[in-house]
Length: 635
Image (cartoon, rainbow, N blue to C red; front, top):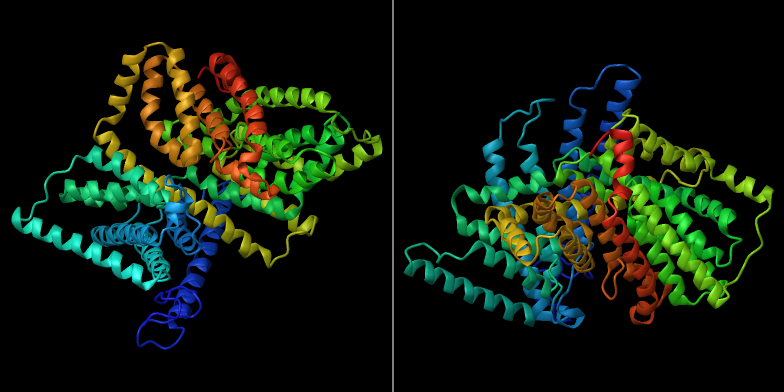
């Protein structure tokens, strides 16, 4: 029986409602128990990655012998993190969505019910195919450690089963009358499909794969489906249409999308960023920037840019950057008399520029897509970041002079010395990261685990600002954010495999070449497309969908893959803050309590300067390629 609100009980909460005939509150308790188990497993999995990668580094440099199988264990843990953390993200409704139909359509109850049924259908399909793959791989032994290879599909099976149960719980919170109507409609469609199968002798009419993908994806975005489901569900239907062994491609590609040692850097750098925020490292870096440039007219605005360069060179996450800068500098700028729109625009533009400052998680992803050296990508990002930062600081100086922004007293030599001493330990962190990478002493993933350990030692043991009880929470938060990104990578890998099978990259290449064969036209078209898609879909899915389409064309046009990758990163940084839907801009506006329309004009001015800098970088490849060439040889 439905509760007083007309909704059936939720599996994972919702006021302790119950299913018919059940003891009051059992659904709530069961959901809480399942959620606690998933959260604990997520924390243990991310700690396993830190320990396994760290143990590999310790054995190699301290014991002078490699630890066999450490990398294999770590990547297995990454697969488990993806699907266990994805379940926790589902319960917290943290998977990103893009409602092309607007918030009003997404709030319509029957639309919400239909979307959640699609989620459940997708998770059920993944579970079934994962069970098939689990049976096939049972008894197969890994090459290194020798664990059973069925542990990979088992991670998908357990994680996606929990995710599906949480989706059922969310569905159950909707009004019962809406559920009845939607379930009746879906049941009618199912009966119609069964009748069609009977008439056609058990075969559905063939539906074109490309049509399913290119129609299903925007249609699901229209009704506010999570991005991972919007990518994965059309791929599931397309694989069903192909039949046979093709359906096993679904769990195989989902696993392959996360089973990559380089991608381990993503959760590790995210955890390092969380530890920095909590341990006071980011605050000390901003204080140093204030002592260095705070005395200039518009000093706090300059501090935002310099602080972003210092902080982004450690955190690796644009979202973390805008959150930290917004929390530290938005209130201070308003107190000093900056207009709220100006403060939001400066923080947004600085964070958009900061994505080019290594370490950058998107660069790690692009390295796996384009088979590039992460070290080369990191080196290639420094000078383009300097070009965009210089343009921003010139605009800030002009705006400060025109609008008579406040000037603060120059820091004394004593204050500067104290700020430098306070930031000395935080400044050693980028030295540790880049020194270990550029000298070849450690891989990017190993440098990420060194960053985690160093940030924890400084924040917990020296500054004493990270209590021990906060460590599980920080690991859980990092695991959820990482799992969301890795789920997108995994789902998009299935989607892009089907696009490649249908020769969509060749079609796109022919279409662009028909319009113009000039490299400048290709570069301009690429910048516009990547920036727009990044604003619409966020960075990771936009790059995963478009990257495999555009890289072959760039090679055909004679554009350096390394140079093109840096342009993609810059486009994503700008797109994340592009009005009106850039997710980074939404975060900045939320922190400043400013409606997006009120800041769009000012943000547009600052992003215009970044776009001008991006064009300079695009048409002067030397800016991107000089450092990698100098340190690593011709690229």
